[in-house]
Amino acid sequence: MDISGKTTDQKGSHTGFLWLATFIAAMGSLLFGYDTGIVNGSLEFMAQKSQLDLTAFQQGIVSSGLTLGAAFGAIIGGPFADRIGRKKILTILGIIFSIGAIGCAFATNIGILIAFRFILGLAVGSASANVPVYIAEIAPTELRGKMVTTAQVMIVSGQFVAFGVNAALTPLGASNAAIWRWMLGLGTIPGIILWIGMYLIPESPRWLVSQGKMDKALGVLRKIRAAASVDSEMKEIQDKDKADKELNAEQATFKELISKRWVVQILITGAMLGIIQQFAGINSIMYYGGKIIQESGFNPTVAAILNAGNGLLSIVGAVLGMFTIDWLGRRKLEFAGLTICGITLVAAGVIHSTVPNAGWAGITIVVLVYLYIIFFQGTLGPVTWLINSEIFPQRYRGIGTGITIFVLWIGNFIVGLLSPVLLEWNMSNTFYIFAICCVLGIIFVAMRVPETKGVPLEEVEQYFRNKYDK
Image (cartoon, rainbow, N blue to C red):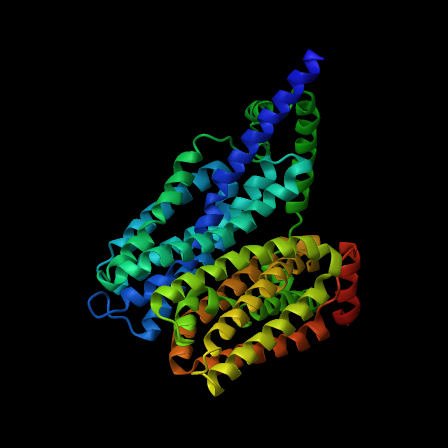
């Protein structure tokens, strides 16, 4: 009985330590959400004449400079981590996040601000690639799904924290427009937690095996696993590493990818899904939701508080998506998301253009925005990433998903860049444009995207071969 109790305590200790490691690593994901969301409330203050005196287009550049950096960070982050290690890359990202936040807070002109936002973007993109990988590689099989999903939940949690900071500090902006510097600078805190925290947790045993450091890998496993499972898992990791290296030796080049028509069609499908996800308008709302709510008739302080609801409901939608994605299927969720997002956008646009001064108009638009966010985060948000991971054959998966993720980030950049200009021009028409994109997305999904729920990956490959390999 004593032995059994001891084993249970040891296992519980390992699990607690693994959750701590997951939380620390997921600070990178929280910073992903915080740094993309904090501009929602800070742009209004930095745009004032007493501060940086930004035009609408310059506000778009400040916001989207981060997403442009993220596009490149996502591409280079994975290979760099393969070379120097998961732990070291996340430690470096913690330093970059901290320096980037301080640099933004003390920026004296728009050029310096954009430069540091781009640097933050490199960290955001790299974190989006490396945080889930690190967590997956340290997690035991039975907890891997929950632990890896933590990274996704932390992204929307980071946005919620950013909107909460905006709501708390916005009232102070009435007497001190420089409050935006505090909004951006507070991102230093989770950056330091990530930076210092990574010294307290282990390197990925799978990466250590890939580098031939078997003794170190075994030492890590003994710290994070019950003794009875160490040897068997070590053998499993070594076998998987051998198989991965054989597979990587056969990975396709870009030249080979574009030489096969049916693979190019898969690439087009995956890239367009990313474009559809972004042009449905989500980041226009997540980056400029405060501006949208003010345009609906609320003062800046109330708008900041209501905008915090966007972050909270993003978490709700993301959690709902976790439980429905394997139940309803990918195509149904894509259709449902695009349809409901399109309807809410049109309804909000009609109300704003026809009865903007009605007493009920403003709060109705806010409710419609809330519905849009819940359904987007529960459907188009996760489904796009999942389909892209399923449609590429193994030989083309690495390079194919890398390209589609890059395209998705570029779509994010374009939406972030143009949204302030569009919203300043006409908010209703901006909603209509995104709604039209939703309709075009429905048509595209109906014509091009197969249902992949419960379908072996080999059959997904055969679908594209049969349709395009002629």
